Length: 296
Length: 339
Image (cartoon, rainbow over all chains, first blue to last red; front, side, top):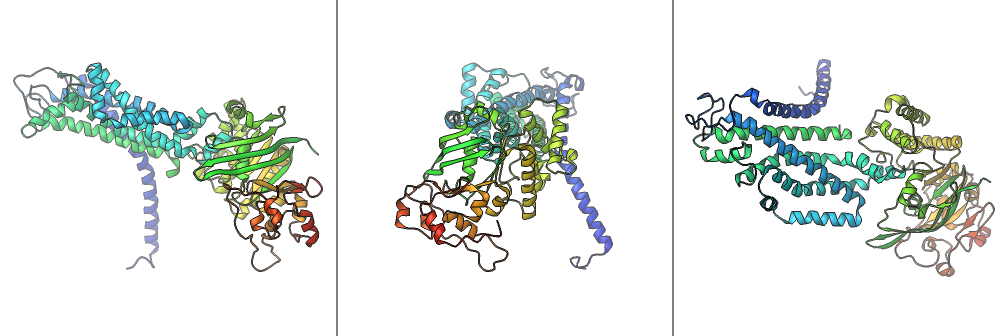
């Protein structure tokens, strides 16, 4: 039967009911993105903070009798690595460092880059030219090479790694934010805010920033995961976290050699990175929805 | 006659663009008196909006050269063009307020109506949170928004165009300005809402005793609302005078053509339009700028050093050297419907 011209009353009711249900579900789902992301991240944070409770094992103690033990054997829930170190303990304790990198490195560059981009875009003129040429300068160098050069100069340590990321990564935020600000500046609501006698500071931070922050916030979630990977690359080069301190990235690169024989070495810390990555992405999407009330 | 509030003298606003220097405002002078409604009328691109924005100091400073004087009288004759950013900030919103063409984009989309209104109230006064909230609700009620206290929480996208313009008027009035510039406040609204908004503006103007500059391309709207009218063409004032004089006895051919172009309900047939289009404001030729489109153009018009010539009582003036002759030759203008 063709429903296009004749639908029974019960069918109509059904249609209405489904439509209402869909609408309700989509409203919940939008919040759900953020909530599930926060929940995932919350679980990860709780797990790494409660590491001593969750596992009695040490992250650096070597069990000489059980190297490369598969998960569940030899008294190691997730198995051991090539030196016989407990993988669960290493993932949990390593998570502390990785999350510190994700938050510590990213938050500073997010705030710094956003403010610089906002200023450049809003004030314009000479300040804009100078700041953007500095940004160009940073973009002209291969990112990783620049970071390696800075760490090589300062000496390898966790703090110097942070410093190197802070010095180099704000430029992406500044460039995104500047472009957004230049567009927003021409909007009538900015003109209207100026016409009401609001200060430049107020116009920038209360009127332009909330309308443009979505882009940098979403980018920062990707960047946070990127910074974990970066820390892994630096660890691999011996410039980041120094062994035997556990860190997901270096665990993955160490485990690569054993991928065909002992898959868990690289796969399990890899999964941890994936979980954190997904959590950050969900938070980014969820925040973007909340920051733009008009798109509902 | 009440005392002057704002005197604009020989105002220039030139924009440096890729095509050259655009003379958006080119020697505009007028006076706004206290509690007066002044209408500025003209085609798109005649410099109406640029004039308003220059007065408010809202032209992009990087590409604009401004000259002349905008004297604001209440605080001891200050020239607005000479004020520092900080000094001007204290006047904007507090003494001078402006409402914009398109209410859909003139409010910040991510802040609720109530927040934006309270922000405007707090910008120039010191009230407690409860007081400013109460004042916000009161203002929303005053501009005719039903269930005002509930709608404070709404975001701009939840308001219709007419409601948004009402909210914008409320925001503009937050600090009881002495002068309100309304830049085509109803252009993007439908006719019914347009009428409501204009009545509201007039009512508020009468209640508060503020002065109002109403900008429009619609001479019918202007003539109904304003005490005095300025007609602008190509960045210049071509005619000014009392509303009744302009409508019943226009002296400039452009004003006449504008009145002629209005649709009359009694007269059937095609609307009479003005042939041609406004001149480019980049290469301004000497002489009368309306000459290329004027029915009465002579050779002298092309070289005449234009100036506003006295053309009647109550400060009636026109930028046409033949206005006397043309007025005598023509039948009285037939615009009874407006008068």
